[in-house]
Image 1 (cartoon, helix red, strand yellow):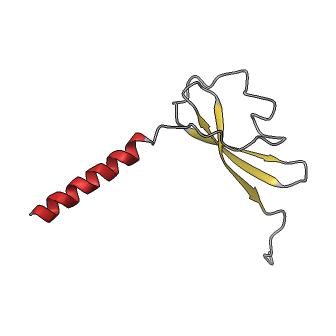
Image 2 (tube, rainbow, N blue to C red):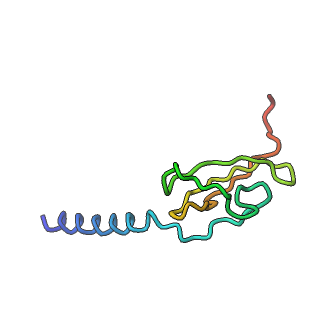
Image 3 (cartoon, rainbow, N blue to C red):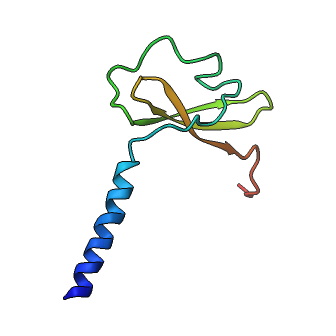
Length: 96
């Protein structure tokens, strides 16, 4: 009985640590590159209908012809944070 109470206490503390940092976007994120929504600074129009903390993708072609997909997160001040960036391959090795 005591070991299950200890395990429950440890799990509760671990869960509390996970939930307190979930809404924090203090990181600067990735630096914008040409084609990013935030390349010339934050957009003038604010995303007022989107919930804070929500994310959305943006796909574009960079200056070297690569397909780039960025994932943005809306911060509490309605500015955008580049959370992820993925480069899609220019060619594939498929026989199709």
